[in-house]
Each structure stands twice: as C-alpha cells, then as structure tokens.
Length: 555
Ligand SMILES: Nc1nc2c(c(=O)[nH]1)N[C@H]1C(S)=C(S)[C@@H](COP(=O)(O)O)O[C@H]1N2
Ligand SMILES: [Mo]
Image (cartoon, rainbow, N blue to C red; front, top):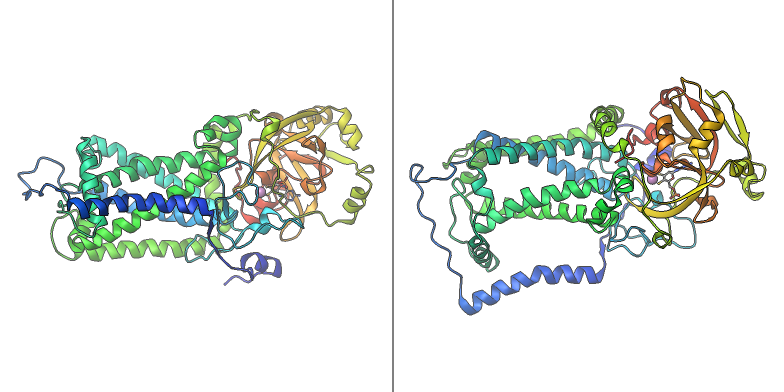
C-alpha cells in the first residue's frame, strides 16, 4: 500500500464516511407515481380483460427466415466493449458525482434547492462551508477510483472511456445500417407500440410472453428497450455531457438551455445513468430467465445451441471486466501521473481544435445572479494577508514581473485607474456546481499591454496568498493567448461590491472558458514565463500538480 502523510490521509480516508440518499419528497412521489401508473394499468387490464393476445411466434428454421440470422462478430465485440466502457463510465461518474453530492434543476446550486442529495450533511449557515468540505467519500467497490477528492483521476477515467464509448457507438450504428441488423432494433410499424404494451402486461403480471428466439428477432418491448438504449440513452448521455463544459456553455448558453440549463443537464446525465443501470438489471435478469445457456451462446459465440460454451466464455469475459476495475484502482493509486498524461495526450489535440477556440460571450442579466455562490478553496493563513485584509488592502502591491520589458508594482487604486470592465458569467467548478455572478476588474489584456511581455513569454503564472490542500502556495497558469481572449479579468469586484475575502480579496482571476480551479483567488503576484513546466511540479497549477486535475480545463 502507499503510505500517506496526515494531510493526504485525512482526504483519502476521511473518518466521516456516512452515505445517505435524500430525495425531495415531491420528486420522489412523482417518480413513484410515474412508475406505478403503467403497473397499475397493466394489472387492471389483466384483471378485467385477461392477458392480451400476442401472436404465437412461428417456429423458425434457419432457411425459412428472411431477417438477420444471429449476431455477427462485430455485434458481439461491440456488445462486449460497450459493457467495458459503460460500466467504467458509471463507476468513474459516481466518483465525480460525490465530489458535489447534490443535483439541481437550477443553475445557482443554492443549498436546499437540490432535488437529490447523496450526503447526510445540510450546509451549515453559521460558518464557511466550501464545496470541497461538501465532497463525500465513496467506496472503491462501487466507484473508480472511489475515496474522496480524487475527482481529477475519476475524470481521467471518465474521458478516456468516453472516447471508447463514442467510437464503439459510431461503429455499431454504421455497421447496423450497413447490414440488415438494423431490422432487429428499429421498430418499423406503429403496431410495435401496441405489441410492446401487450408484452408489458405479461411481464408486469408475472407472465412470460411467447418468446421469440432472440437469435432471429426480439419481442416488441425488447425491441423498444434496445432501440432506446442505443438511440436515446446513448446520445442523451453524450449531449448532456457536452452541456457541462464551461467552454461550450459560456460560448453557447442556448445549448445548455436545450436541457433546461447547465445543472438540469447534469441531472439528466445522472438520470440517464440510472436508465442504463435499470436497463442492465432487467436485461441481465431476462437473459438468465429465458434460457441462459442458449442466450449466452447468442451473445458470446454467435451460435444458436444449448452447449455451455457461451456461458463459460461469458463468465470469463465478465471476469476480465471485473479485473479491469481492479487494475484501474492500481493505476489510479500508483500511476496517477501517467493516467493524467495519457488523458492529456488524447484530449489535448481535440480540445485545441474545438473547445479551446470558443471565446466566451455574455448572455446573463442581473436577474440571473445567484443568490448564494458556493465558495471554494483554502482561505489564506499568512499573516501578511491578514494584516492587509484588516486595512482593506490599502498597503497591497501586486507585483507583475518575469519575462516582461516593464515590470510593475500596482496598488488597487493603480489597477482601477488602468481600466475596468464588468461581465456576468457562469462559473463552473470541476466538482460539478455552478453559479452566476457579476465580476468587475481590469482586463488582463490591458495589464499585458502595460508590462509588455518579451517574445519568449508564452504563459502567465498567478501566485496566491492562499495555501493548498497538501501544503505550498496555490498557483495556476494560463497561456498568454488565453488571457488575451477569454474574457480574462483580474477581478476586484463581485456583484458590484469589492471582492469579499472569501471570494478572493484583493484580486482573483476570471477566465470564462475554463473550470474554476484555474481562477486563482487571493492573488499575490503575477509572473510571465516561458512555460508552465518551470513552476511547481510543472503540470500547470497546484491542483494539476497535487490532485491530478485535468491539464485541459475546458470540459
Ligand atoms: N488560492 C486559491 N484559489 C482558488 C482555489 C483555491 O483553493 N485556492 N480554488 C479554486 C476553485 S477549485 C474554484 S471552484 C474557485 C472557487 O471560487 P469561489 O470561491 O468564488 O466560488 O476558486 C479557485 N481558486
Ligand atoms: Mo473548483
């Protein structure tokens, strides 16, 4: 095992590991009613009219049947890899979820407005309660990598697997329509709906309908279920995933609105996951109940017989997947840096050509401003900051230097005299919450013009008075290009008032195409540098160094 120091141990093995699910009663009642309604209707139909008629399935002989015969190799491979990717997506997604264990249908994330909470804790109002304080422990048995505050690693797994999931999905759908296999999945007559209902009445009243041999076709309900998983759940998961990207949402707010907003997209992403889970449970149960050995031969071997080969090989396949979960834990704990870099290797080129090119634009009004904005990060404990805070930062001088022709030291008044702009934007924390606020301050562009970076200055480092989770000052870096374009502010005001201490006084960064951890609070000095590699551990920031956060913060 790895041995941790006290600070790491407190994060990874917190003493409070309670887990509780609370669902808003009105939401719970609605969900139960929606689930019970079709059940009730099925029973009424059964008790009053008897079981509805489902046409008998004709005996199929391989040579008297026109549709697709069995499952070609590509179907079986797609099925297996999809199982690998979806389960890893669920496992890593759960880890990400508990880093902010509340789901909302509003963009403000005001405590108490959530519809579901996976924590026993009510947000205290008598003291500062940061989003980090609110993150919960989750067991590595159900989540990858599990434990607490490993959202960076969980995201690496989530994104690495999402590429696999999307590629498998594309390949599957293309092949589906390139062959006659699509006949299986796509309902081709409205009568299918009626038949699906009749099938449901059978299942709901504990009757097994006459079973089609799955080798040649599916019953109507099965067809609709499979169709929904491939053509509804899959795309919905992908589209709501994109709707959580700060770069995408702050460039195209309408896109998040398609799903009812940024947090509603997160909720739908979660509900889609529940849909996948429910499907998996029912799917597996029915495979076991309706001729396990034969079904496993269909799925694994592509044959239609009663041998045990499919079953045995199927269990081997499931074993391999379980082992891959264990291996993922091993990599997460012993090679997190390689994992972080692997993700960067794949994601970086994609991001540079897509999300990183989206300049943020403003689409919010004063009315949208969140009544309460989650605070995050560790307040500075340094004496000099505390003294400065007492005097309203009158003695504060921002040092701007490094690879510049004209290094400066600026008071808050100097900074104000250089210019000020305001914008109302949505803040996205990597943990999952958002908030809308109005920020005012000096555009970084003006500061850059003042200090005149040398030609070899390609990045800008922001150092904080505040510390970090495991010790050392908090810092982060930006490419020079991004501070010039991404509505980047050296903010000294929040919602029209001087920046409150908790939110980063005297100065904090705003970069609207990125995640919150890039926006250093309590800024002490700024340095222009050649590359982020020369500072800290060289990963681009304190969270990237210590918590393996994404090296690319646009998603
Ligand atoms: N100095 C410092 N700056 C920081 C952090 C921190 O821990 N220390 N946390 C970051 C994170 S993770 C987020 S989400 C935002 C939170 O800003 P807020 O407190 O205004 O919500 O600050 C960022 N800036
Ligand atoms: Mo954050």
